[in-house]
Image (tube, rainbow, N blue to C red; front, side, top):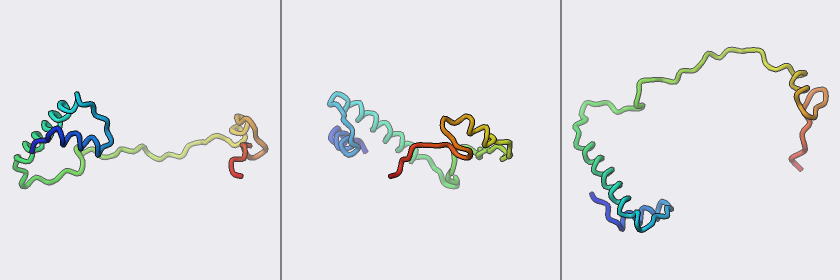
Length: 95
């Protein structure tokens, strides 16, 4: 299946893309190359090949969840611009 220039203009319109007339031919060539590549992939015999879920066998490696000392409340309040004994004071945002 080959894409025509009219197809490229329609695809660009549907994708809400502004495509200059001078670029329609280049885009047509690019889309046709992708479609040719997909046809080549469809020609490959994949019987007996399990579908991939991920491209690699690597899994997420998370660091250990280790509790550590946090910032003391008094020290945190000292760092704030406007505080009382327990909280940071901030301007009211809800009326």
